[in-house]
Length: 635
Image 1 (tube, helix red, strand yellow):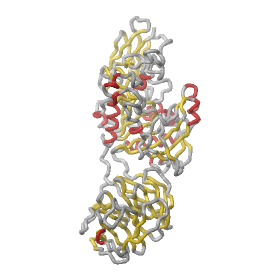
Image 2 (cartoon, helix red, strand yellow; image 1 turned 180 degrees about the horizontal axis):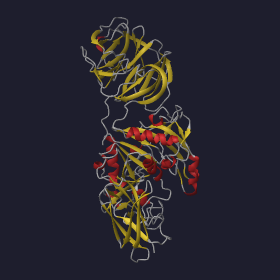
Image 3 (cartoon, helix red, strand yellow; image 1 turned 180 degrees about the vertical axis):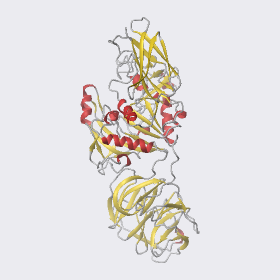
Image 4 (cartoon, one colour; image 1 turned 135 degrees about the vertical axis):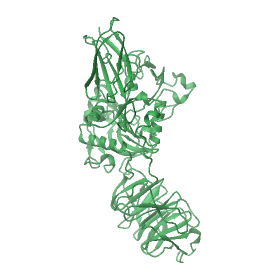
């Protein structure tokens, strides 16, 4: 005889009571012992005798929020049982969410249950193409703990060993999880979290869009849509729209891959990556996990801070697998960039890649990608691999993980981020979704406006140019083109094309102009004596050589660079302090722009694009920040 056990819930609040159902394999009475262990430390927290089919555990309020394992034994080895049938796993949730930590770690009980009794007809959701697989499985049965590989264990033990303040929840707690999530700044998805309900996904996406952050140290994330029934104790996943009766009632809830018809909601719109482009090594093929590593692609990014890596370096050997997520990439510039054609947001920034096409012999060939992107007011980081937690002994994996948790779990994140390599840029302007620059040697450079570390490409000469500008739209005689202020006081223009094109004279600028901007049908110029000047587009003389009727609007507030965006002027002084004013043709002071200033020496060129300010300087990396600081994250 051996004991079979399950808990009536996957999580319980501190101070609550959790019921366990017990049975013996021979149908006789249950007599034995239970040992309750904190699964993140192996610390035994409770022991007791058990008699009968029910045992209840009163959870002390002093227990950590963590993952726990209750092991039931009667002295008989559990031969012939599923390996975990005598164990019941559960999470202890905090009685006051967010009171001790800003980070919430989700445990993927739905995925654990999906793999429970794999291959057993009518009892397991697996194997995927097995005709007699189950479409409905209950949490009210033995098993449903982590798989033998324990994909989540490495991260959970590392969090506890490093003293990181975190709180835990079951993934099922995120089903209608808006109230829970509002107490946290960061949600961590770890390991293999493959099965998500619509309500769970809606809650997590809403949390991030409102300013929360999401760190995914996982892969194959949110691959299948599932439904919860019977007060959350039954999981439904047909994996087949034809077999799912919901197809005729509510197509968006049909239990197929999130990316498939009729749901059409690719998971990478939330996660940034997908197993559709990823790789998998199964069964005996899992041995290749030990052989693979990432290649760093953007080591100027904050995620790599303190790692000592350079672009092209290998790292994180052993972390890739057994499944990885990826995105369709464009390598035409020599730097990988998300195309956005596969559901991955075009703003996704690629940090590392691995070519795993040779894994086709083990299961599925593809790639692995690590990266990050903004989703609404929040940030998503995705490590792109299930086995990340098992590689945390690697100092680089450790440091990247710390960087992600420190930044995304903070009360307020740094606003500036690097979007390009160091260069000798002295002027910037964004025009027609292209970022133009002039370097100290007078070359006109260009690259796409993107968070990716794209290289500059020379497209012509701009030898006398000291400042660039572009209008939001054409105004009077000023078309939507690239404008330049020259050292000898001329305003020039050229088409915003990424190939050589001639500059033509527009008009003369006020003497000693150092910065220009176009806004609301007018031209603004800052002179070296700290005076702001203005002329309307319709006031410009037909003869470019004739003097224009510039008029002084008063002090420029120490501005050395000027930009326009969304009907507003922006400026920065020599210390990096940012300021703004409306484009009024009357004296109006600049006012300080809320948020983080640019670091001294990093802002000798300024432009605006799509709600963000972009700065650069000779010898400095290209950086950007939102013009409006993000609100403090939840929690």
